[in-house]
Image (cartoon, rainbow, N blue to C red; front, side):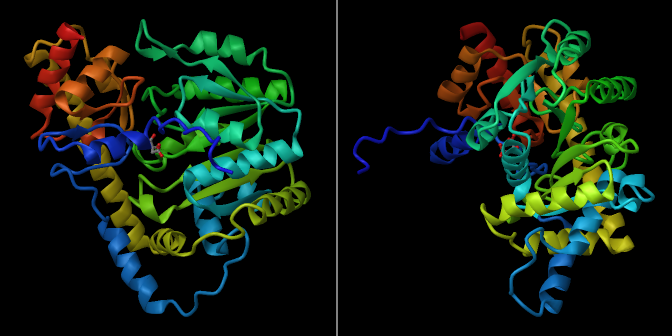
Length: 399
Ligand code: LMR
């Protein structure tokens, strides 16, 4: 039966990690997958997470199933993080949240929901976008198109071109926006641009879908939710797909959430029932542990404060590495002005490296970067930055 099956292509991001692990070069550098590393190259368990783990293990009484959307206290904590204390959508009971296995799980639940409940909707994705977005929505059977996002001439947002295309999106379609720290470009709209995007989508009757995987890695946990909150106007509908892989360092625990905001509480009840049906036919109900850690932290002011400080420390280290990278590229005489890297936000930098340069770095220098030229800045440290910048300068000359 399996003889005729062809091999699938290697995943453009996670496939790099496999290749990196198999590389015997002791000086290899992995700047592919978006995983935070400290200055010693370690992806740490946060102290807040370690303490929450002790508490959860000490108090856990059962391993019985959770409800289909997961634990209610987790859903409440996620909504407060997204929309803020005193949010109208929360108070009106028009938001429903399910714990999903990671942000990818949230996107897939959103995709299945769109396909089954809004079958005529096309989903518009930014160009460029996270490499897994098109594949997730294709797997769910949701048609996708793209809108301009990144302007390589300015290394900034192609805002007017973006608005032009979005102004032509038909009513009833959906537009996926990255809530902060755009993956892969690191370029986000300004507050005024967020407001104009929210105005436009609401005037056109287009559903916003926010992918929110890096809350806290831009300017701060509260500050990074500002763009998303522009869309959460009275009576407005939206979907938010959250991930807590990066900001809680809970990658392998698979902790994410999908949140639907409906026009009113009655509609929200019907949306919730369809959301539960989608989940039941996919993974039935979520794994408990990671979500229990998140709600234990967010529900305890002391632990929440510690977590906020730990997110700030990760953010500061990444921003420090951005500055160091720009300085070291100049020191190693890499061609061009890389100062734009300092303006990008979050884990990633769209470096402008070409595909042949990316291939050169991997094949000749054991430095792993996503084919688009996206660098995970959180994988840079004072010990590997010189080797990296020297290799980039060589790639520019030789590839
Ligand atoms: C990334 O973009 O590297 C991360 O979101 C990890 C992943 O699953 O691709």
